[in-house]
Amino acid sequence: MRISVEEHLSWILEASTPLPERVVAVHEAHGMILSETVRSRHPLPLWDNSAMDGYALRAADLATASERDPVELRIVGEVAAGSDADPTIAPGTAVRIMTGAPVPSTADAVVPVESTLSDRSDDVWAHRAVRVQAPARVGTNIRRRGEDVAAGSAIAHAGQPLGAARLAALAAAGAQQVRVRRRPRVAVIATGSELRGPGESLERGRIPESNSLLIAGLLRELGIEPVAVRRSADDAPGISRQLRELGAESDVVVTTGGVGPGRHDVVRIALEREERVRAVRVAVRPGQPQCAGRLSSGALVFALPGNPVSAAVSFELFVRPALLALQGRDDVQRIRVPARAAAGWRGAAGRLQVLPVVVADGPDGPSCVPAVDPSGVSHAVGGHGAANGYALVGADRGDVAPGDTVPVILVAP
Image (cartoon, rainbow, N blue to C red; front, side):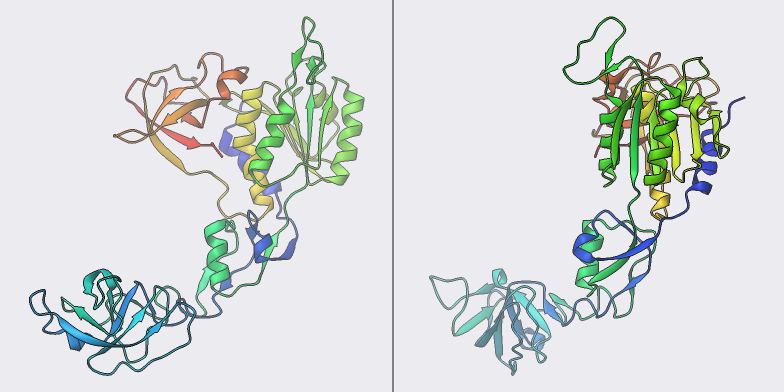
């Protein structure tokens, strides 16, 4: 009997208890997951400031301004970004002001330099007097203190990832350190007596080993540097030893190969004595055989199929969400987008079909075409290399016709 993808993932996430917290400097936190709410220490902006390079002035002085009869204002100074100057703007006067500079307390509008006439033929900036050719409303081109974020407002919440934009917001809000979950320590074992490393001879029955590179790369795309990457022959006692050793040193061990029902599927055999690890058949294509759970030595284990696309799909569906859950991420699933099938393909009756596709943008939105032959997905490592997404075809949907809309998850880094 097969279980659904949702059932298997739910079981995995229940076992994925968040890792301990640590405090790190904001500039060291990129890619980590926040474990506390962070509030702004001050308003953003900190003060009323100019949104343009131009002139700070009194809007009332421009009530009659026009192209035919511009209003002339006397220049009484300049305020640059970073200046603490607060010159008085009396009626009939203005100051040059740069973008981001504090607006003088007695000014209530900023007119961009492009909308003015200079008193110098060799400079767009006026030196003694500037002429303004149109009225301005009170508040024009002024960023008000606190209009973006009020002091004490939440900037980020526990469970959110710290990408570049969120970290920049935290720094602007005065945060110097943040509390995060530490990244999981992950070990990788690629199994198979048929596997050979770079430069080794490929006699009949031997193939180049690529799964360790695949899984290690997927980990790095999550910001996780694997603590160990190994290759193992089909030796159940040897794999058991490695699982005990790595399970004591790591938070997660990911293996590929040897999880089917065959006599030589040694990872499944090695895991049979692990009481908290279960072997299941999941209603998905590719990636039906799965082993997952917690080793007696401590780590979570994910034993994935050995065919490269099956391993990649299994990582996407089960391992990636678990790694994010371990770090306290509040959303562990990727966003799905609708895409138009530019070519049709056969579905997988009774199973969720996860098909590697090439997604392209077009005038009518995203479209996708299979990156591999849908009838032989699991081993198609060459075609899989061109994929930048997975089309998800439900177990009860059937075949996909050209022009149909299918949900797609984008996986290109």
